[in-house]
Image 1 (cartoon, rainbow, N blue to C red):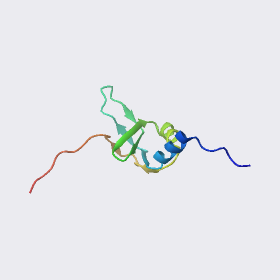
Image 2 (image 1 turned 90 degrees about the vertical axis):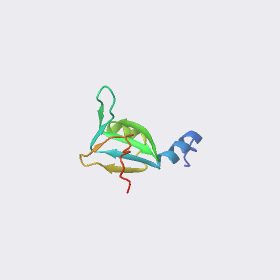
Image 3 (image 1 turned 120 degrees about the vertical axis):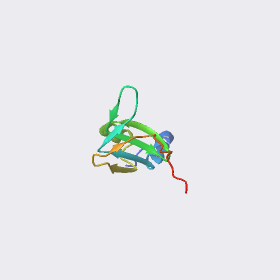
Image 4 (image 1 turned 30 degrees about the horizontal axis):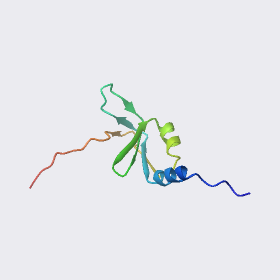
Length: 87
């Protein structure tokens, strides 16, 4: 039997999720006042979508897109290094 059509909102989310990058397997330091440290961060293009534990973010973004194993490295999402050397 044919499956039911996917609702428009679900199709839209699926298209967005296929461009999501999930960084997991390391430390994500949010620099929040509470000293929050997470396991994973999801982003698309130049926007952070979510920070949390790996299982929750995998579930939220449907396992679509790309996942990068940080191999224990630390990420500082949103931090921009403005330090430059002009010649």
